[in-house]
Image 1 (cartoon, rainbow, N blue to C red):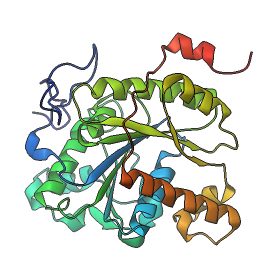
Image 2 (tube, helix red, strand yellow):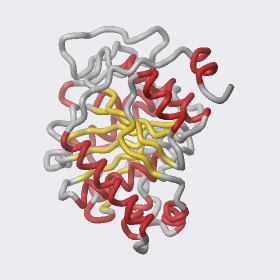
Image 3 (cartoon, rainbow, N blue to C red):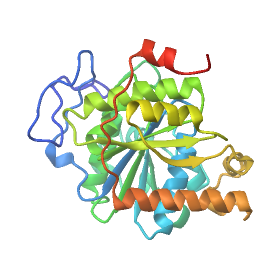
Image 4 (spheres, rainbow, N blue to C red):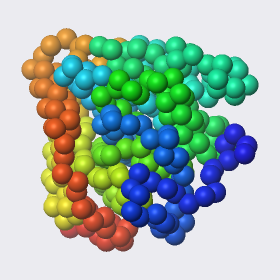
Length: 306
């Protein structure tokens, strides 16, 4: 098999009772049972490109760590900028380091591709092929295999996948075969809610064969949540947390640090408390949601003002 050839076989998910196709035209990603992550709680974070998934993921990882959990964050975007606020640098990707050993994975050491960040959060950037040249799903799969081979998942409490924004390929779908819960980040506007609806449909399709279930959504960069809440009520989705458009969050990215490392202000303290509350809620477990996405034309008519 070429390095970035997508698997041809039908998906085999963590649910053994239902094996089959999960929708016409859907990318099929095969999971070997021995590549399952194990006992850690696994979350996959989705949302429209630029909506703040990496900021949300990194601060959520930090919050889990401050609750005493052993956390691993895996960036799944070729831009490899998921974890820099945790590590204070752009890390080499799994693909970068595999290239240095001509893709002989047995020659790699954990410290070649995994780096410790804020409060002990372990960080990995999967990377990916250049745009238009291959399947990112293969890269995510190889990353998990490396972590398994080096026994890096055995003492991990939480694994968090920060997933690329576009619903286009295996790079989007692959984390769903490992995750038990999917989260969607959206702001209170047409474009991100429209994208969230399409992401919901993709997750719903994958949940036919994988154990992943929709846990809820996170409102981000929004003073109000009226359109989000109206959409959630209509579809059965649930808002788990709300983060307003704070300048401190923007500045934390420029400072290359998490929100928890910013100077204390009432707004910063409130946002940090909300991240800790969200982490505690996710750790305790969320009831899976049977949310029903709308058809594109229906949500187009549903959103906005008359």
